[in-house]
Amino acid sequence: MSLEDLYREIILDHYRNPRNRGDLPSPPALRVEGFNPLCGDEVVLYVDVVDDEGEGGDRVADIRISGQGCSISQSSASMMSAAVKGRTSAEARQLIRAFKAMMSIHEHRLDGDGREVVEAVAPNPEVKLGDLEALRGVVKFPVRIKCATLSWNTLAQALDDAQSTRGRSDQAKVEGA
Amino acid sequence: MAHGIAPSVKADFPLLCQERRLVYLDSAASSQKPRAVLEAMDHYYENTHANVHRGVYRLAEQATAAFEDARSKVARFIGAPSAAGVVFTKNATEAINLVAHSYGRHCLPAGKAILLTEMEHHANLVPWLMLREETGVELRYLPVADDGRLVLDDLDRLLDGVGLVSVTAMSNVLGTLNPIRHLADAAHAVGAVMVVDGSQYVPHLPTDVAALGCDLLAFTGHKMCGPTGIGVLWGRDDLLDSMPAFLGGGEMITDVRLDGWKPNVLPWKFEAGTPPIAEAVGLGAAVDYLTGLGMDAVRAHEVELTTYALATLAERHGDDLRVFGPADPEGRGGVLSFAYHGIHPHDLSQVLDETGVCIRAGHHCAKPLMRRMGVNATARASFYVYNDESDVDALSEALLSASKFFA
Image 1 (cartoon, one colour):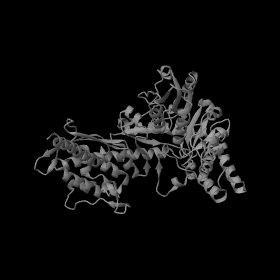
Image 2 (tube, rainbow over the protein chains, first blue to last red):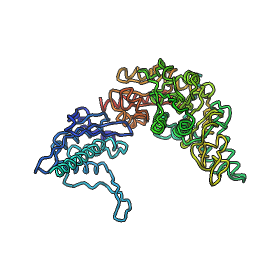
Image 3 (tube, one colour):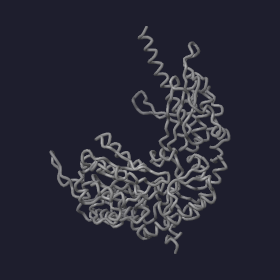
Image 4 (tube, rainbow over the protein chains, first blue to last red):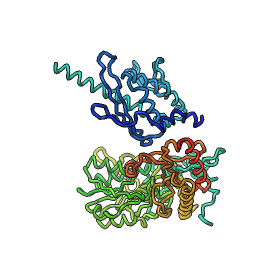
């Protein structure tokens, strides 16, 4: 377990030259904050989710990142932004699952008898992580997993928010019709 | 002798005597434990353990004596006039919560405000913020200057209408030693109660509650060579007497009926349930250990080491390294928060760990102070009796290797 496993060159590249840095007018973009209470790091995501009628539902048309953090949280956010930009929300969610699985994140759920079951996040094997594979070494440094997943959890929150906002406006359309 | 702490004290700490060299620079978070403390706790469990203040058999009497003996040691250590004012808590956080719940909710005169500072640890902020949510009490804050000292220019105005002042004696981030006596005198002049968070002060400087001028003093055992799970609230007897009990249960009563209860006398009034007995014994041994070294010598050692660290880091790293807090080693404790090369503290700490150098990275449970300083995290190296100049040199070297990765 060496530092080179953690700080791969591509990670340092994204840290030094973060992609999609900045903000978007909000609204229409969603602005969602994520905090790592351990270290005080914060990430602010601006996510523009549009509804491409007949094109497979919601799509992440644009994404911007601001906030401060360590090389792991910043590079993870940068790579994430490059990976999800232009993807459908469903594809973005699959990427989130695949990334969390790589980070050995476990989920808690209740089984049929109401007992709590803890199991690894099961990704879709079809989903390819590409450059994000460089973050695999983080798993060997458990304290840093939260750094790597901060932006991903925040994106999941943004997609949930977008869905519920959409749900409300659809409801309004129905009620207005 | 220059500082009076022999380099051989490191041999007293088993964890620091491993094969792989450990440069432990995080004592402000928690100190390591000398063998004497570990042995005292083992000895207690192997020979003396029973519940305290309950049984009449000899073993229970011995356990009670060991527990109360520890209380007396702590009282002597802080110059308390009696052991009755020494209340054992879980930690300093619980001690301050006790004050916020008991004094804050029941004794603070209506309409009186509370004065804190911008440099407080969350332990001396959140209990008061919770109190404000409940009672609407006004909270005021002494500002922090860029050099890490409290700004006292507006003290008189800020104290007008204040019923309680609660201030850290030494910042866990900046190392700043605050003018507690001055603040206590000013607080008393307006009839306010003076609470001091001594978590970073009591382990490192000779402490005398009368000289500090405080009415209540909170500190914790694990930062002063003692075990986790035990802290102290010291208070003036008359003040503690006037405060209602905090937690209810066994030991804190003199009588219980189905329709009421009567509180115990001090200090047991504030010690509900079976207390941390072995931990108290361990804290007593820690106090003995520190007294054996001499707290004047501990302070002198840390001033000397801090002086060396400030000079060495400035010389080796120049403008690449920025230390937060007072520049004068006499005005600060051995806590150095710093920024290095723009490298995030998390990354810095991770790389330093490769060479066995343990520093803290983060907001140090002082997020408002971080915002005041315009950062969201710092790296922090903190010293104690077992650190020496070679530890500072190791830190300095390790920083250079970190810059390789990120600069």
